[in-house]
Length: 168
Image 1 (cartoon, rainbow, N blue to C red):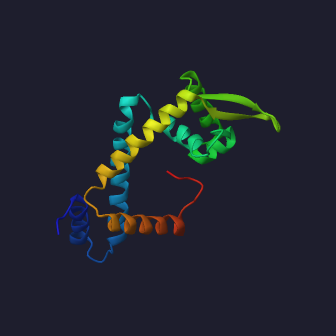
Image 2: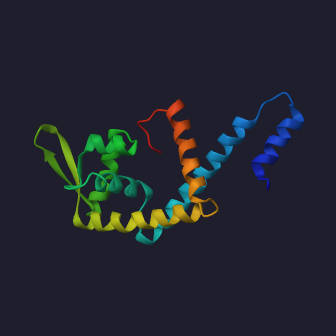
Image 3: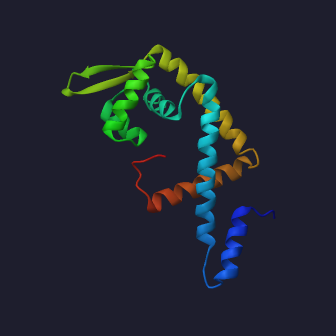
């Protein structure tokens, strides 16, 4: 089996501190490294559309709701793992690009509903295909069964030790 830079790191620790059990650290380092690579890949996939990942995340959350492709701003913040303040700034930027619109929430005068514009829907419908293509390219070395097994294992890790309100 081929080795990677993480194997080298773990071997160095083993040489220096043979009593340490480093297997879990090897998993975590690899996931952290992959996370950085996947973020770069997402940015590159969305670049032709001049779409930032934070914009994609918000548009995607709205699009996944189905018609009328809308959420209260607080729900949109929760869906994207952001604070209300950060979400307000991001909605401002999306609204400036005419990708979303705000309207008052009829059930709560303090709240707003954020919805996709037709341009926002067109943008996210194209962007999701770019993200799917990039993900497929990243995992091309894995069979369908291996992808499924990996997804199950990663799901199990998330469910056993992390706050489920944050998807990223």
